[in-house]
Every structure is written in C-alpha cells, then in structure tokens.
Amino acid sequence: MKEKGISFGQGKGSIAHNNREFVADNVDPLRTPQNITFVCQPIGEAYDQLFKESTERYNAKQKRNDRKVHGSYYEHLFGVKPCNNVRTAADKRKSFYEDVVQIGKKEDSGYDTEDFQLVADCLKEYMEGFQKRNPNFFVFNSTPAH
Image (tube, rainbow, N blue to C red; front, top):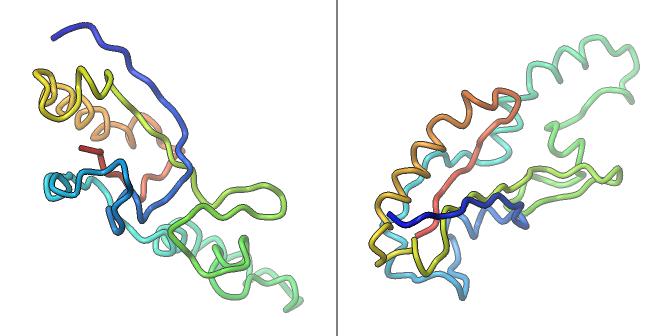
C-alpha cells in the first residue's frame, strides 16, 4: 500500500443522500448494492431513544402546561416533524451533524484501485470502534461510500 492521508470533514447533512434514497450526480448507481450500512435509524427514533425519558421527567416536574414539551423533543427544538436534512433552530443548534472520514483519494484508494479493499477494511474498523471511543456522540446513521 502506498502512503495515504486521512481527512475529516463535515458534510451538509443529507440522510437521504447517504442512504441512496436518491442518486446524486457523483454516485455510480451500479455500485450502490455494494454499500455497507453500519447504522440506519430514523432521526425521530434516535431523538426519542436519547431524549424521551428526560423529556418525560422534565414534563412531570412542570406545574404549568405552557412549560411542558408537547410532541417529540425534535419537534419542540426545530418546530417541524423529523426529516432527512439538517434543520437549524433559531439559536443556531443543528438537528444533527454529518462527519465525513476519508482515507486517500478517489484516484489511489477508490473503487477499482489496488488499495480499495484495504482502505474499506480500515474505515470499517474505524467505524466499529467509533461509538466506544466517543461515548458522548450518538451514531444514528452511518454508511460508507463506494
């Protein structure tokens, strides 16, 4: 294997694009059946899993109905039902963040290159240990690109 760089960036945050629910111009549709999905949980379910109990405890302590969280916590924060794109609240809080990890370049590590499988295995190993290394993050959607 030739020496490669690793890069980390933040994407725009489109769950539908990541899950290949639509095919963007930069995606080869013939390769999408080879995609590996590590985690694919709807964002509304993820918010319920993370915040439902604490929202219920918060509501139980409130004496005034206007201070209670009505509906899901996601809807309370962003004013809309959960959706597949990043929502930004009035206070600039985002509904989720998309982090992109890449090893090498498309030309030396992409599909049909000598190092493709090794790079794919490295990214798989990275993802499998991510939650353990980062316990304050919650991964609800993770799909590597091919």
